[in-house]
Length: 125
Image (tube, rainbow, N blue to C red):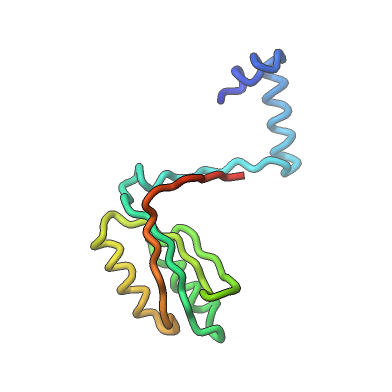
């Protein structure tokens, strides 16, 4: 929403909105980021992959997985899986290729794939 629209709704000047916004950014109370829409960029398949890996080499294995182009998000976990990756792929064949490469990474013991059927809620705050 443009600053001018926010100002109109709050009945203040656009300059005041701009100044407050800049102050919040400067004070690090507000961070502006860009989130790409992978589906609009050609990735028609999204999936989560739970990964079981050798705990003694977890950082090294995670770095190798993070280098894969398909990986959007990668976190270390406590629980049944050591790592959870979110991946974006063009089609089923692309997913298969990614999973084949994932399985060939030394230290990856097992993984389970959860293909996104529908995103029900997605927020960035």
